Length: 124
Image (tube, rainbow, N blue to C red; front, side, top):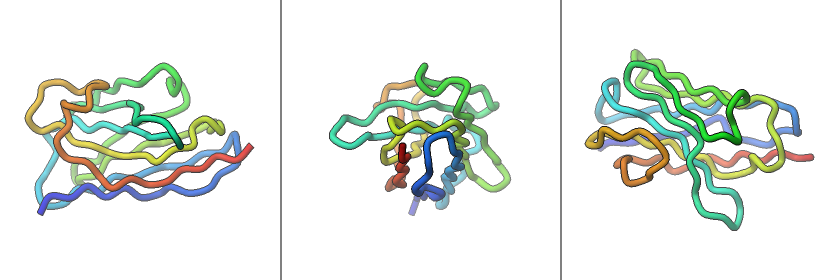
């Protein structure tokens, strides 16, 4: 059974940092793009950023310079490092894998495996 499991969420003050992890099991995603999305309270899910299989990254404008995506293929794990957090970063954060699409951007349809999400709450 293929699973993506996010961890590392929690409550942090504005200006603080968190590192989310997305551990994959059931298959290797070393040749696949991985994305991070988030769903703020009362809003639709939105794209945060993605990393392709060779390590190139792409971010939405609101997180550029603050968030960094990386991957450790030996551990089949992707990370989202979040610095300078703001209250508007509060959301449930999801990781996703794109195994059948060449796309690795903001289109959710490019991603066919999803984690269950982890809550990030940033207090002001």
